Image 1 (cartoon, rainbow, N blue to C red):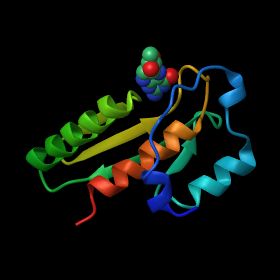
Image 2 (cartoon, helix red, strand yellow; image 1 turned 45 degrees about the vertical axis):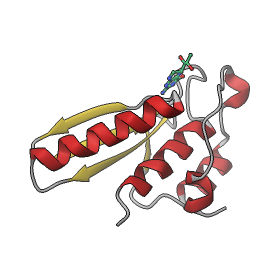
Image 3 (tube, rainbow, N blue to C red; image 1 turned 30 degrees about the vertical axis):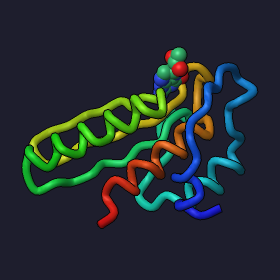
Length: 113
Ligand SMILES: C[C@H](O)[C@H](O)[C@H]1CNC2=NC(N)=NC(=O)C2=N1
């Protein structure tokens, strides 16, 4: 499944441990997302995006926020003047679900031009 296909999917409500992805699936999906890393003992994925100034950083944050509200799946954000770190984890699952990978792929498409 390509990043394109991942990004073309939508989040669905996933609640409960049965939606947690196993390590093999995480490795498989991560291979489609350049620059993303697994952190927090396998419970989250993260990537830091660089921008030329605060205007561009804030524009990105707003675009990510809009997409997150559309998908009803929300990242942890950490930002400064020229960067924003996006962390995805599914609280309702207590780790990584397919929603995190769909949203990470959707973030990547926001930056395509
Ligand atoms: C009711 C609503 O769909 C849930 O609370 C959603 C909202 N956004 C969410 N975002 C994230 N990252 N994890 C969740 O488990 C989650 N749950």
